[in-house]
Image 1 (cartoon, rainbow, N blue to C red):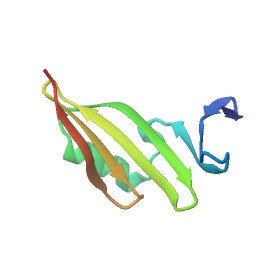
Image 2 (image 1 turned 60 degrees about the horizontal axis):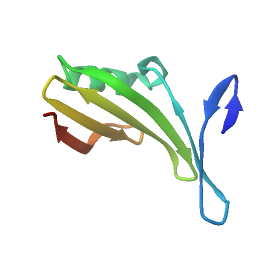
Image 3 (image 1 turned 30 degrees about the vertical axis):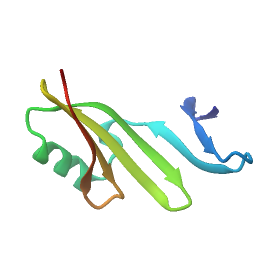
Image 4 (image 1 turned 30 degrees about the horizontal axis):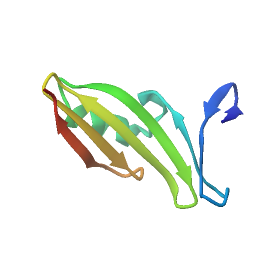
Amino acid sequence: HFQLNAQAVPPFSSIEGNLLALSRHITSHHLPLSLQTSLRKGHEGAWISELFELNSEEGITYYATVETADCKVVLKSNGQSWTPYNKNKKD
């Protein structure tokens, strides 16, 4: 793990040890305004259980896990809009 401004920043590396990406947990306030708005607007009644950004050579990608009592959805964004990445029904 790396430390950046007293925050853990886990690295992702290849088998050869090359750095591929860094990730960090964030709050919704760290998202671009357009993503904050669309995340709230598209998921009324749900809560955000996890939110992180992944910084790689391809740029920054955001992942948000939103949940309701019945469902858990992971959303992905390149900074423009959210797209479903994974969806699971709860037991």
